Image (cartoon, rainbow, N blue to C red; front, side, top):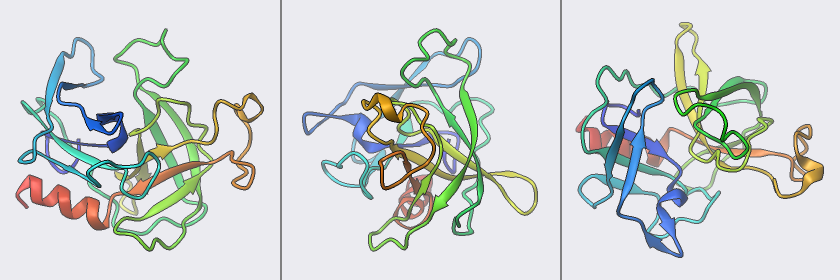
Length: 200
């Protein structure tokens, strides 16, 4: 949930196949017995970073409205402070590859940290982490504990290292070697688009 109980923020590339936007997409809350809710991907209810977003790029983001709000959903507020190297993170993924035996209502969570936060020249911000994200982790949320102790939404996973390289499976952070995860922050263009859709 992002800003309101009926908006979902995730990686944009999961909505595209062969350059064409998918129209029949669904969301499922990770709670016992939750059902599938249709996502409204039309122009009035969705914002994408680009018409054909490139996976792992600064425009790899989508904010999409659910056909019905999730009852009792309490969106995480975005974290206003910019990430810096060393910031602790809690990263939650829905169902990464290799986790097929994990029940659908059980998210996969891990502790990791920001390793580098470059200055972005684009309309969004990004940062590199040592999170051991698996394939199919795109769109997973990065949480950060704010100064008030509350969990806040810091960003989302948009790309992992070359996970097909077995030598990098579970390898320590090494950006030059490709063992790194990239995330988009929830500020700049993403926050502006979310506020527009939420009517704030």
